[in-house]
Image 1 (cartoon, rainbow, N blue to C red):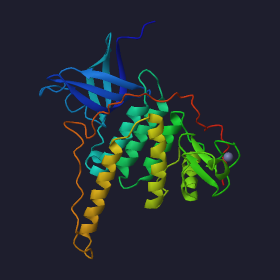
Image 2 (cartoon, protein in one colour):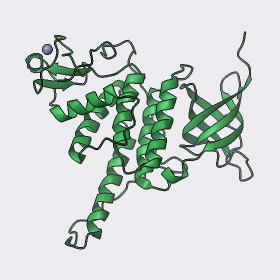
Image 3 (spheres, rainbow, N blue to C red):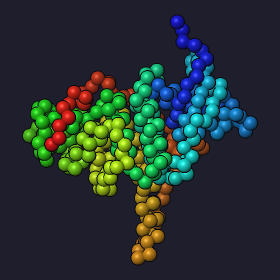
Image 4 (cartoon, rainbow, N blue to C red):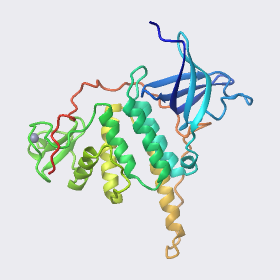
Length: 310
Ligand SMILES: [Zn+2]
């Protein structure tokens, strides 16, 4: 039986792009975890009832029409606007980083419900505790896992032996940890500290757990974030452009925090500038993505790996 032409779904707006004089092309992740591109005809007219509901990072209820070549949005209502999150620049920057990853990994017509749940839960975590960075690490690792790219964290990706404490490296292209013996014969193996490996294993073992009780140092956060970011970029096969914006915001806020300290000498350097990343509604412009994801049956090791501590 043919799919109905009119149907409803919920989703989260990842980005929008203006088209023509008054129309808007919205990219969403629908509640089944598939990517959805839909036209909102006339949405940019001043009297449009769709105006305001299709801002990025808004959870919406949609009435859709399935046309021969694309979806059209007949009605849209806001379910969750994340207004608190959007009131903070640092939280907004992080949320757009999450949205860019979801946009990169989600596939049109390919349901992935855990991906939608992961994105929604992480947005709520960022909104509830904007200072906490741990949910971002959990999101990065879970993003890889729900898309079939979970890094191997327990056995050497080359010889398949258990890695010994401290005698390991990490190879993004091979999908996880490698023992030092095998690493000596391989290019691309990079150091990964033992605390960083333990942190990754913690998030792997406690994927569904609340991250509010976890606190890791800024240096450890940066190391884990960087290794996951490299893995994500490898599987996406492109840069994550919003990452740069997150770093710029962090630098500017650190500079401003230092300025406010009474014992701090006057800065000799200039305040770090934020490079404008957008025109219109999207803080991060739509990526010009020419490449697709690697095959999901590629050489990633994950679920079968024994969960052992080092
Ligand atoms: Zn090995």
